[in-house]
Image (cartoon, rainbow, N blue to C red; front, side):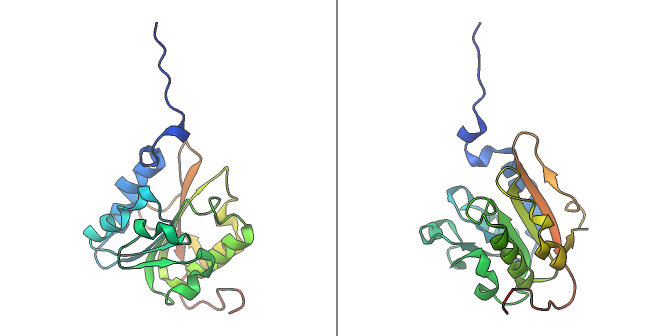
Length: 192
């Protein structure tokens, strides 16, 4: 009798992971509404089609990536090379309706201090009520929703369909949906 082995998840193309399927088929289409300004953080070959997907639905997409060689996978006109920890200095205050940070925490931005600084900066560039989508892996990062900046500047999202954490049994990836607190922010970024 022949034995068939399923490939280890590490061998699968990223686009076939269950979390990526949810991202592409549920999260991006539902958030990419006409007139919405979106910031996508983290550009790799498997993300190169995301800006076009968002914009075909009517959103205006910007991309951010620290690696200058990854520019080719970002938005062709609205891409910034920079560190997510400095996001507040890279974009205008309250510029975005949505920020999607997927696979950055634990995959380059590893320190709790850096993650906290990034979340505080994201609070500055998101409009009041704007949504922060954090995609992270439970085996590579602490829970970013428990960081001081997350509780200070964000609340759990109440938007229908995005009011809870999405976790996957087959992989360690998690999506969290947070809403930026209403009103102006006082000193959201340390030292400013």
